[in-house]
Length: 409
Image (tube, rainbow, N blue to C red; front, side, top):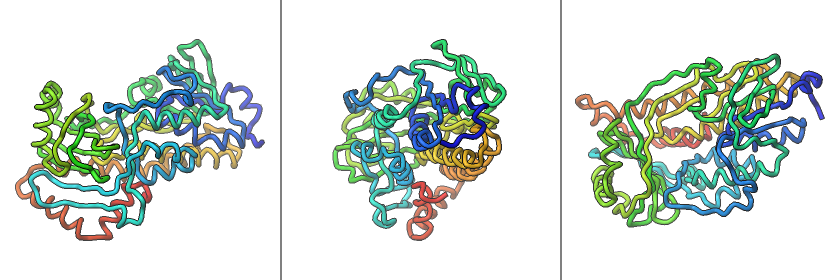
């Protein structure tokens, strides 16, 4: 077993502490598995929400109201690397086609899995199922769990950070990873600011039933009020992401089911047939948020704690998973170079790798929102012509698709 600075490591209770056991934190725990075995790293996960004592015995009960995520093909390949994809795919709905259009305009762009030579452009998976599969894998690893517990105080110390937990535990770690979302307050506690650009939009999310098979088609529809997305789910159901100018969503939230479905039909059109039912409706405000210091000595910020994107292109979790894999690769390179886990040169190499990918994804998703949110004279016609042109130019369309699939950066 190879270890750098063994005396310094013994002074710490843990090599790595992951704050947050959600999808990003759990993915990181799984990705660390071979390095835990190879180097004997002591890893702890802190999660504030109670979890099942034995995730392998938890009954899987999918519901019509469950949230789901679009997983790009590149992310599916990364889950394959983590050894969880075969279990995860049992509840995944493949995306065979993507249809991008603007309401009231003739222009459209179509992407096809067959054209790109892949089995699927992506997959839609219930978040609860992804979490269960990841936690089943984590239960097989020599990890220390503090759950439910919160980090009440996070303090920099020589060689890492000290973490005071709500369960009374006192931990010290060479590397602390914040993967606890954008609302924990730990970044602010450390003085890490965030750049925030509100879109003045709110997303309404729900599962909807449809009257005809969706045939694995995902729809991105731009309207005067904002973009809409429909993602395929098992059976004749789809996940709806409906963007509203902030404040206007309250009217749709208050509507009875029948009237809501009529309003949705008017806004989206008839491409999926008739909307037949809707599950629980949830809303959240949309902003572009990026942490100003994604890394510090002994600290890395991942997932929504590092960046929150508009859901228009479905790239948020896919971007976060690439960050997970890049961090693990950087940590292994640092270990081979006999550097401490929280060494700044290791973390700067990680951030250099991430910054380009993050900037490209933000530019793409933010650009779509702003382009289709403008209504200057003749611009709608230009957008329609652009969608038609993109559909006709095969190499450009395929390049865009491969980037969105996470197969190119």
